[in-house]
Image (cartoon, rainbow, N blue to C red; front, side, top):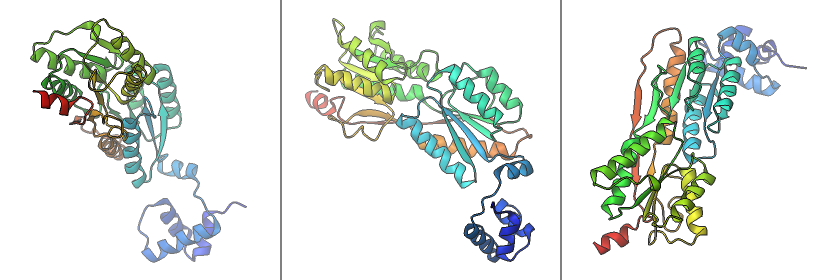
Length: 341
């Protein structure tokens, strides 16, 4: 038979009200009685009725998270940050993977709305702005991560993508490279636009002409990143260095270089974006842009919890922009280039 709150109270030798406060995590209860109730609940196998708790508190104690690709180191780390903070506050995380598909993203948004999650953290595709606004009007707070959307009036946790890609490409230029290719993400996404802007800025400052043939799009996918690198290698005059705008495309680009027996950095130098755990392990170790991904997640979760606590009252919306860091290793030929200068 299912155990009830009354059974817990009876086992612990306290009132039902005291047992309810302990298991519902509200009100004052002495440490002695709290210990008795928790011990009794464990002994008899009592589990609180989440639905009843939700009806009483008008909370589901759940947060929805929608990201584009759970397989990437960047988003895995972001989600870990979100979950660590949420769990500490008694919330559970429902994770959804959109695959950069606006329809799939819309379906997840609708499902989270129907489930009445207490808040949503999303890295949006930019195609469901109206529906996100509808969710916010219903009283469910939303926080954006990684992707900036001007039309949505909420806090957005971002990184300085333009600065990061500028620093990466400038590093290549300083080492003597002039024919620098780029494998960018998805054209319509702000993150891609910002990283491409940094690439162009670095070239213009050094009076290097931007060659459209050296610019490819890999749609933030490994297979597309591989195809883009193959296209660059097949050019009559291939690039001597390539900047790749995310981890999965970098993986694809490295596979293309390996399969075509292209030596790194002697024939082509490469810089990636994101700093996966395998980056220092490849041969040669990969120079890359490291994003503060875990911090993005913890900050997003903290901001969302604050918005949920102040639901119904106006809260401050802001852009929180974090700085990435260029991690210099050997895939750009630092040792070779500097020695020959």
